[in-house]
Length: 440
Ligand SMILES: [Mn+2]
Image (cartoon, rainbow, N blue to C red; front, side, top):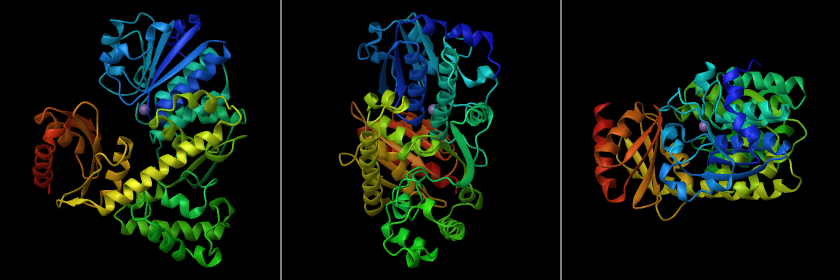
């Protein structure tokens, strides 16, 4: 791996610091960034503290114990606030892969500065692991850096590319990783087969996630029910022919639900197995699901133990995960039973009944061919958070509608979100409907 001189220089404050604070985002990429970076810092004998945030606002500075540390690293967030941060911190580094950032700033580490695509070549965790590896070389750190890239779905044709690919190669060479092609749903080696589909939230599988009847039908069509009537079978225990039949049944099911052939084929890909681990840490993708649950529950205390292979932490982390998956499951079921049908828009109001992190999965479960799914949850300070999935040109539509009602929003083509004043929700929805209908 060629590492440019500017990058080595830029991480010098981390070498010199005795104590480092890592401020990170609450998803798998943020957790994996903090975890991978901690490995290098701790092995050099430094003190490390981690703070997990739902979202970074520069004015939160009083709430975070910045002044107790020699240096601060922001990972998977804060890229657009470099100027504001330099107003109150001297020694800091921002490792981010989002847009709207000043690429000339001396505190930034960003994929674009390395000639990499920030959506598929490297995520914040890839770069955090790179920094960690520069401080203290360790191939396992590189493998753990891939966890966040998996959480951000940085795959093309079911496999990593760019710097992520380089990490795979290095980790393979040193034996910390094994790669093979198979179905890539998280939990395949640790969960019973019906539960894999029932609790699948990354991705949400329409007609299966949160739908016990749908899962039973699928397994029946695949001939699995007659072979294992109790359902007490793991995917890894199936024979090759059974696996093939299961995938064919799944493929047909998802096509009927409006998925494109290439979307369903993307469920087959490279599986990156982490050697010497077990349970939900056994593959990079399932470790991402575990990390995401830890982050969404703001359990920063579990990050270092998980990423430094502390014995005994897995039980607790997996209980956080199963509670998280149960909550998502209940939210998806609730959303499907209590949605409002507005034609092009199908939406559920989950304020006061569920934590905010369920909104993306519920919106995804409500979306279908030609219809946008939306979920409303609580946010702080008189705001609501809105997630939308499906359709097209969503980012532009959502950000325009949100701005008109005094909120803010954005995202991607088929996945967007907004934060809007609670009393403006109705107005926001009617603006959305107008725009979505005009696209028809
Ligand atoms: Mn990210």
